[in-house]
Length: 399
Image 1 (spheres, rainbow, N blue to C red):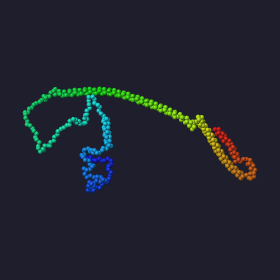
Image 2 (cartoon, helix red, strand yellow; image 1 turned 90 degrees about the vertical axis):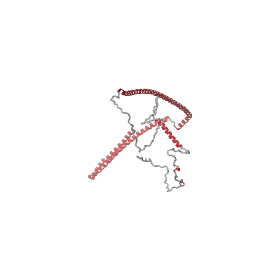
Image 3 (cartoon, one colour; image 1 turned 60 degrees about the vertical axis):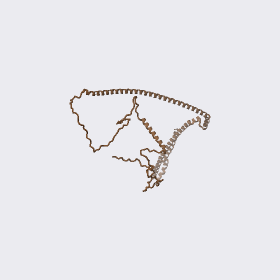
Image 4 (cartoon, helix red, strand yellow; image 1 turned 120 degrees about the vertical axis):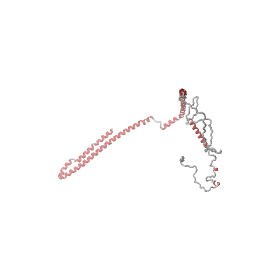
């Protein structure tokens, strides 16, 4: 014996009423008058008077009283559900594949396709049944009745082949075999003829269907051409009407514009000319053609002059740097010559007596000292490079 385990409820437990504490119950119940508590729950002593208990049997349909009005929303929802179910059933019946219509001379009948067939009859089968208690078990069974033997026993002898005639015995079997063979042959011939007739009928039906299909395609193509021609004509007519409407609107707009601008154009041109919107073509040509060219040429000349000044500055800078180097070298030579002259004078004063100094002084005055010669050479060099910048300046200006 198996038992079914209770299934666990899905989700969490919910309760519809407001949670509240369990009231304390007394040992003895109060009377019915004291139980009527307007604030607390009403307790009933007898379920026959409990309004929450529905009277009647459990299998009968519970009917509402006539005073209760049905909910219109509930009725509308039920009608919507019923209408949806009917539409779904109708759609399912339409989508279900149906058998083709029967041919002429035949009709469709319902047949049983179950595994076990059952007899169908219009009359309800009835049968009588009886019931009887068993016999007493104490009584023994009655013995079988065996009648007494009567008559005289007679015996006979049958030899092999006495009761069998081949020609007579095989005739029914041959008749059955020949009849079955002929019947089977006739059935096969009839089946072949029926199949040939069915094929011929199918070919005729296919030919008729092909002819009807070709005719249908021709009619559809003709209808399509007529529809396209109709749409094309309607489109052309709409375009013609649209163009006529646009032309009429343009003509009306042009006439209105001409009548409106007849007095407006002179005043507008006068205002524009007063504000300077109309210009002199010669002045505009000078401003847009000659002045830009002149500015470009001036810019080119300024660039050339700036390039010449840059070249002159470079030459002067190089000349000044060279002269600074020459002056530094001359200063070093002068310092060296003065040192040598001082050393020579010191040596002469130590070796020559004072008399000899008086006699030799005129000779030394006549000869130039090395520092004086160096100063004269430096003065000549200063006079000679002064002419070079003028040449370079002229060349830069020519450039």
